[in-house]
Amino acid sequence: MILRILFIVGLVLCVPAVFVLDHALTVGPASWALDQTTFWGTPIANFVFWIGLAHAGTFFSAMLLVLNVKWQKRIAFPAEISTIAALFVAAIFPLIHLGIPQRFYLMFPMGLFRHLYVNMESPLVWDFIAILVYLCLSIFFLLIHAGSLRFPSLVAFRRPLAWVLFPLVLWVHTIVSLDFAITLIPTWQGAYFPIYFIVGALFSGIALVLILSELEGRRLRRLEDLLIAFSWGLLALWIWELMTKEIWCPEILFFGFLVPQLLWIRPLRAIPTIRVVIAMSVIFALWWERIKLVMPSDSEWTPVDYGWIALGWGGFMAIYFGLRLVTKRIFSDRIDTISTEVSVEPFPKKRMALYWGAGFSAALLFVAWFILRVPTVPWVRMVPVFFPLMALVTGFLIVVDAFSRVLNRRVLFGLLGGLGIILGIFGGLIYQGGKTTFDESPTIITTEKMPAIPRPAEVIWKSRCASCHGEDGHLNRKFVHEFYPLPRDISVSRFDSLGVDSLSKVILDGRAFMGAYRGRISESEAHSLIEYMRTLAKEAP
Image 1 (cartoon, rainbow, N blue to C red):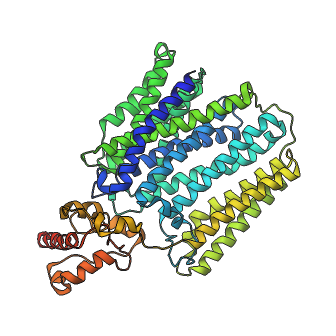
Image 2: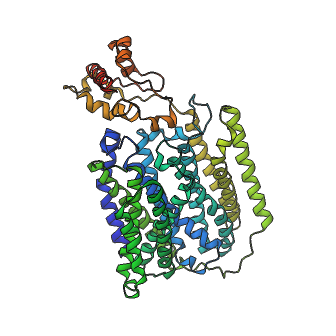
Image 3: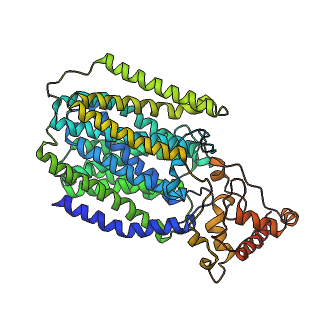
């Protein structure tokens, strides 16, 4: 009953979330609070938070399985489902930042086929590939687990796949931390950042798994012990931040460290509600830590910033509890029957070595092919995507081997053929690509659709231009460095030399990496933008 109620609550939260998402994609970065020193804002803070929650699910299940922890089977299924739900939620936020979500395929490293250069030296591209691979392998891991409930012989394949996932999760969150560590922000630079991110991800993930376990009437004291242990580990990192960078956030210390210490008090620890509240306190602390990390200054939040909360938790609850209800209906009471005591043959080490070798070869061929297509990329910059690609091929071969033992050959070949057709169509669409400049339907671009009253130049600048040129006109260097060469600095002398007509044409028709805005702003608005830029140039030191 509680699962159905929470599923409905998740659907209800998704209603305002849809409006928030629509508004954010329509207006762009101007719809949420922005800190010009870091730019990314609350969407990326929420992205890192949900990626952290996603890591704890499958990683927790895989890690305990590899270490042969017996109580692992009691949390494995909910933990693995929570990973998939959290990953789907996390994927929404980078798509919001892309501005044009339907162009996400431009992140795929297809060389120069589309006359576009995918910057394989950027951690943002490494991120995309690593998280996509992690999602695929998490689904594989869940499929093997679900299949083992009907076919006990599949249990032998869970441990080899867990060995693939174990290092992959550490790899993925290390890359996520590099998104921050290589930027121009001094407080984000440090070799300890990967450890910081991994410990924080596991801390919040343990709290989430504890809550999900309590909702199903299970108490796992080991999770409570781990919550206390990780709180002390993060305290050490927070003290390090204070001593080296003078970063101090009392509310994070209170909710993330002091509240978990209540678990030392046995009468309080024995109350299920108290345990859930403590776990929720930890999740809040880690979410707020991500917010303060990305936006250390106090920016004024908009309704969209608060709307991300409904979007995240509504989406997670709808996906997680929906899948949980489906799995309970299909497998009934067999979900927890999987046991390490099932009599199965151990997975042959030679076969595992063969699969790892095949994965290594496939990743090596891809890297060699890409470097030949784009010889300017140093081979060492391909290392971050090498292991995820190797893990993907290795995991796929393990899954195919597993289900080839229990499925009819015709069924298996049919499934593989269908998957091949889907991937072929998708690959063809990626290869074919499309126009690389943004265009809209002619019914939207027509003059009649332009606003009768010109919008203020400052409003247009903040919504259309500030993401690259900076709110003050002095460039958003951190953002632009990721993908584009730096635009020219604005100056009064440059405006005088180019003239209004020339600059207006650049704004309306685009040039080089700058998109065309004809049809989205009028000529009079383009002229007002030029005057506004001239004002910014005069104010420049």
